[in-house]
Length: 262
Image (cartoon, rainbow, N blue to C red):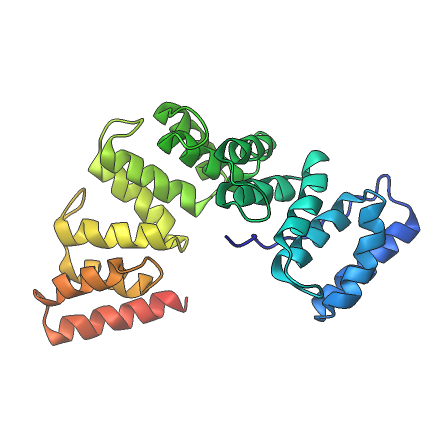
């Protein structure tokens, strides 16, 4: 599990000028790669219950930046920030409970934190909550509720939400089965860089499911996804190559290269 990047937003209300200066100094140290210096700035503030500093302490301990990797310490600081309503901390603490890093593995606790952040508008948590409902992980399975949360996240532009909704349409889970809707959702997610959706789109073009069969397009998406979706890209390319000329393969590779650099 990888903590998602954190953009520090300093709330001036309730912070004295010294605290603001220390946070600013800590972030400046982070930006120049002086993680030990950042740790020394953040720790006193975190101990004084500054939520932004607590989040940064969690990040530093998780990645071992300026301190040895310590998932338990990361979880401790993220828990403090999560209890104050910080959605970044809530989401990542949920992920730690889901995987058992730094805490005892508990799908129910994971769902608890995902829900806290999801109800505050965090798209990643909305997706995580939707997936939990879809599979009944840590909560009773409810495909309709899964679709609800995924749609909320999709409205915020979440690529993973769009891709997961595509799979729901493909399987008829929580929505009427509709291959065309599946492809429509895959395409939005794929254009946003979601590897799973790119692979799903490749298979759709390869098999002609929900879209007119188009072997070169299947190869194109397989080339775009590369190894980011496990062996899916390799499987698609192996199948597609059997029905393509060398010229078609070269053109698909050229187009995929241009797409990847746009």
